[in-house]
Image 1 (cartoon, rainbow, N blue to C red):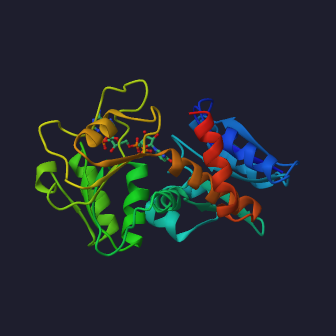
Image 2: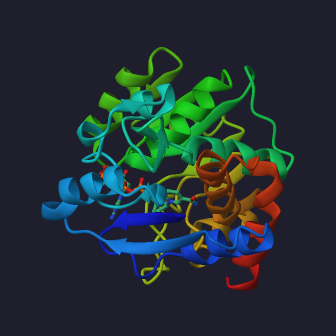
Length: 273
Ligand code: NDP
């Protein structure tokens, strides 16, 4: 069986490394994970191909197609529907189902690091793009209260409205530093090659005793993580989330529980970081 990675570009992706390592470790010798570079004009054709090829179990969908793919599928999971983005496609009874495992990956990695999220958690999410939607959904599912801060205020406002009463927009970081125990970077600031950038304004003190989770994992220690550690916060990068979202997708294609493969994927990613 085959699983595709549909995106544009895809050559840089670490997913083949971890998915193929998991197939091999579990003895799924006939399975392989393949890159499938797909410009937008070919997306519909690619999804039709996926639908009709009986040796393809499903796909991951990545930038820039996570939203564009929605109308091409037969059904969406409740999470994909609420988040408004699909990162995993699987087949059930001939139908193509769109799901989103980023939110599960985020929660699983927090759990891995012993960070509890519940009704008493107050979190600040930086960003309002696709990953911020998944993270805000995850935090809301756990009952947390969420503030959103984004360069484009209107985009944060739209996300807050879509998520409901647990989420509100904050225009100034200094308004919430005294409130939050968890800060999650869902912007692309700090990602290679622009590693000197950070979404945190140096003039604003960081929230005392908080945990900083940076979805960016390349470089493994971002500028934001350095700022956080210098201010005494605990800082975690997004490599574990990458492994956990991959393990959750693997479970949808193969039926093997995510918990059986996430450690394999973590190990592979850590040894290639
Ligand atoms: P999107 O393109 O959907 O969103 C990008 C976000 O970054 C927006 O909020 C955007 O703000 C903000 N941003 C971009 N440039 C700037 C800038 N110069 N100044 C201020 N804000 C800026 O990306 P994603 O949400 O899909 O991904 C965000 C990051 O998360 C990426 O680095 C990605 O690799 C990482 N990621 C990691 C995952 C993991 O498993 N660890 C999973 C998914 C993503 P605006 O709205 O104003 O444009």
